[in-house]
Structure formats: structure tokens, C-alpha cells
Image (cartoon, rainbow, N blue to C red; front, side, top):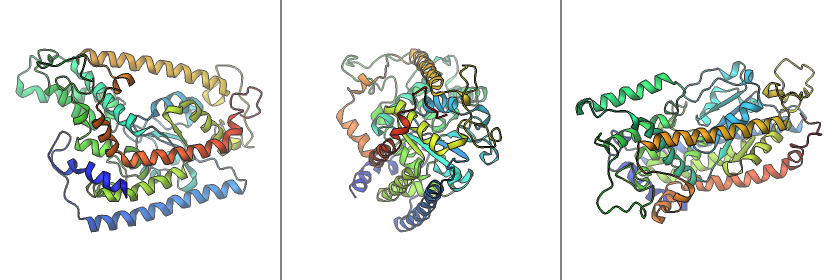
Length: 451
């Protein structure tokens, strides 16, 4: 009940004044009808989730291979999913069984052959995948406060990429049109650009417009009179960028930032393939006490995951998934469908020229570390380019320590569902570690017969 009390206070701004990211307020929804719809829908979803879990346990107890036909990586925004997907999953599984990049649109039918799907879609995507235990779901969690701060930082970062364009020669009435044309140009030029990927498709527009509105096209705006660069934190510089305190109150933030993990696991994001998701989400946002129903469903789906990990324990999470797949994928691990009809392990070759699916763990680790290094260098380069046109801004964990306590408290209030869900996920993670610890101890043993 304490969650409902906190959310009742924290979600009030959503239905109040109009702000960036929302042209008109959502229609008022009646509590009684919302409660009936949410409770009925959650009950059905809980039963379906329990059925999937039962199928998986039955197959495991009977000795049948529990390998899912499709592995769905449910990528929660800013929870380390890019590293997990591009630097590990893409190395672990052969490229010819991976679904094409589907972060902006589902480009393959996973029921027809591809076996690894990674997207920002919510749990509703499982309705488009092989039914029941044929689909295994994995995801990563991150501490909610860190995730929200990272979403703010990344929103500023990707929006700052447009600040290098010279629009000061254009008449004022064409500025908006020019910015829209520029945005469309970048998105058409690179279909998989971050700004084509939910939720950045929405957040980047809001932040880009805000950044442009804070400039007079004569260069980086000077700080206001009396502004002390050395005493004001990086997250509160309104002459340069939307302050964090304003970002977390955006109606759009309530839609795609706060309690994002809970909404994705429940399947009610505004990016959902489920037609009922929009109304259910609005019911929860307008009547916060109903959020406990969605939290209950999200916890049930945490229980049904074949694997989960944490951003702050990335390498251990990777080793855990290797152990889980070795158990779940059994004889078919790292082999292509139809290549080994007897179902025996295909022993990896020692050559570093082997395909990703045939590499031993050591080679996977080497590729993971190399990829991780490349990603860090690319991120630093992109941030340098973006911030070069935005003025004296630099986000870091050290700078986060200067964020006012009242702002951090507000973020906690706004993410009460995710805070409880993450705590629950850590308990589940500990259980998985205990279960697979013996197998994990042989992950790095080159003499192991595991493949």
C-alpha cells in the first residue's frame, strides 16, 4: 500500500499542466472501470505466465531438452543491454540464427527460423513469438535511480548531436521546419540510428526542440548573472539544457522513463504490440494504486525468465547465462539447426577464425572485452562531439553526487514500482546463482568437456 501512497503524490503532475512531450492531456478515466479492466487483464496474464513456467518445469523434470526455440532479450533502456547484446549475445550465437536488427521495427518473423531476438519491445512481444516454453526471455536490471539519471544524460547526449548545425541564417518562421527536416534526414540516412529507436524516438524530439529553444543561434548562451559554474551541479544548467528536475516531471517521462522496467515486463509501454496497453497504462498513471497489480504481474514474469542479470554485475551475469544455456540448450548448444541430428555437442575448434557459435569461452571473453573497449571509446567520442556544441557540460558518477537531495528523493518517489521490482529481481538472481554455481565454476576451465 505504501507504493500506492507514494505514487498518488508522484504522478499528480501527469494530469496537470501541459508540458513538453504532450500536446493535450489524456482523457480522464473512471477508477471503477479501470480497476475492473486492470484486475481482469492481470489475472489472465498471470495464468498464462504460470502456464509457461509449468511447461518449462515439466520438460526439465522429464529429462527433455528445455532449449527454447527463440531467445528473446527484453532490453530495458539504459540497463546495459547494448553491451550485453552486441558484445556477448551476438558473439555467443551464430549470426545465421540471429534475427535481423529489430530495435526500430520487427524485420523477421521469429516463428520461421531466427532464434535470437533483441529489442526494446515489452513483454507483449512474446505474443508474436513461438508460444509457451518455446520462447525463453532474458533481461537485465539496473538500479532505478542510476537508470533514470542515465536516461536523462543520454537524452541530452543524442539531442546534442544536432547542435552543430548552422541554422542562424534562416528566418525564424522556418526554424521549426528546418529542424524537422534535419531530424527526418538523419533518420532516413541511418534507419538504425538511436533516434529511430524507442524510447529515443520520443525523447530525442522533445530534448532537441528544448535545446534549440534555449539558443538564439549566435552560439552557446552565456550563463545568467550571478551563476557560479563551480557551485552549480551539471544537472541544473537551464541556460544550456533542460535541468534534470524538469526532465523527470515531463508527461513523456511518466510514459517512457519512470517505472520503465515494470511497464516493460508487464507489457504496457507506449511501444507495445498489445492494443490494450495504452488504456491499461493510462489507468495506472491516473490511478496509481493500480500500479500494484502491474507490479504483481511483473514479479511473476521475473519468476518465469530463463535468465536475468544486473548491469553492475555484468560479467557474472554473462557467466550465469552461459551456465543456463548449457543446461537449457543441452545438446544443441552452439550448433546450427540440422547440422548435428544426433544432438551431441559440437566441440569447438581452437582456431580464432571459427564462427562465433563454435568458439570456446575464452575466445568469447576476448571478443567481449575487445567489443567493450570499442564501445567505450565510441561513446566517449560521441559525447565529445555532442557536448562540444552545448557548452560546459560533463556527466559522470562524480557529478551525480552533487545532485540535490530533494531531486533524488523525487526520482525515488516516481520509481517506487521499479525499486521494489529490482529488489525482488536481486533475490531471484541470487537463487539462480546458487542453482548454477557449480556449472559457472567450470565456465573458464579450458579442460572442461562442456561445449
